Length: 268
Image (cartoon, rainbow, N blue to C red):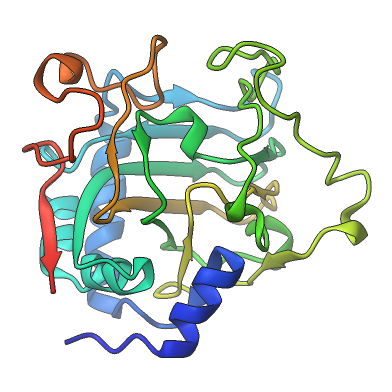
């Protein structure tokens, strides 16, 4: 059994984000590095370039590769990540939702803007957990930042990162994002300088953002998302990010996420 302290569980419930130091071993981080490099050499059709053409660096994302990337699969199925997520979610089960690669090459000045993840997704439910795992040391100014308590709501308007368009929910249907960067002192912002092996765990409704990277540093991140007992399928009339083509015909609205795409990784 993995030890997750009651304090960590309580902090996660209160703040919607914690950092667990040294959760992964050096060997597990090496495995993940191999997976990331293999992913970068063979990006999927789901990959997106998230930096502009004039950016001196390069920011690339990719999604849902665990079935074809043996390194990712080994880490997800053989590590303690699923159990840790289950205990933080206070769930009797932990199911994989998807993996997400986020790589900022040296000198990337593109910020990841403030957003919540869940409005982009095809799920509803409160028991969820994302894990942000850097295989490189990340300075405080480049790391993931999160607004404590924002996971308690409300849902805020998701917009496209590069052109600020409302492509998911209709304009006016959700509250707009506050100007966090304009007055950061008004928000309880969490963020940690991290070393390989540290894992930032956060709720899918927690507002988060990330900074640019220095010219001599890579920031290779693997993010894994987990679902708990109360999460159900919520088909959307628009393309979700990531997309799961054909899932609506197999899982009706309100059904549990019991499907081969979302394997059960841990059960109490």
